[in-house]
Length: 346
Image 1 (cartoon, rainbow, N blue to C red):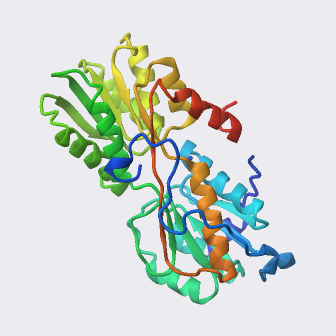
Image 2 (image 1 turned 135 degrees about the vertical axis):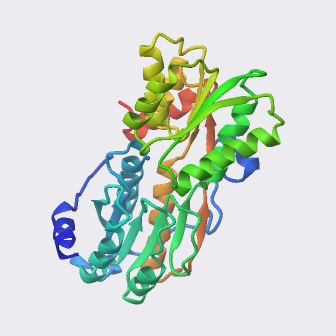
């Protein structure tokens, strides 16, 4: 523990950059919020008791090497700083064992708040976060709407409904009697299973029992490289479509298929996240559709909720469920313009 705490103290990064609702919300054009929707944060961050009188917050990023995770963490930092809050990012490096140490660091270091994107949403941190709240450290669990510890706020999009959104869109695009491949992420990962189950349920609800799934595999992680390793084996069979659970993985699959001589304009590829690379693939015609998780919206809602908690304006445990946007060739230019504006795309 002491070794990890020492690492955390040296790993704080001041990165000054500036990662669907229910079944009915597929295709919405802007993120909707359930909870204190439309509320404005009027608290004065200078009233905090941190260094120089300002609130101090630690942001635990699931994995800063991941495109979506880095976008989300940087946006949370930027949104907090716009409200006058001092915010630093800690890279959890996809290791849930680092989360308790992060919480301990916030409490022992006199921080006022925490933003955590847990690598494993099923990890039980209830007791630790309750102790932190009692010590005056409030928490927003971002990219997570599944829990209920009674003290934290939850901000994000539900993984099942993201899968259901892209599944619903794909059900209307995949030709009759098509054959497909599904690439999941880490075996046993809740987010992976939820995105897979959402897709499968959407296909069932759409009556697409004509579709044949040739194979389903788990990658070692959510990375492009992990997806490419599996797709290389799959090039021995032909499929009409590939569904993978995040844009990084899908882009890896597209790259492998192109190198193997397949026409990536004819094979349909479906993903989730709406990242810059996914949007570029949709624009190029190699990815058929993806679903945007708008990290800009997540960051803004996260910052406002945390300042409300730290100021005492509203310390209740609440959930803010945002909507997703299905991205196709018809609206991809709008999303690309958003990424250009927020610095995610040059």
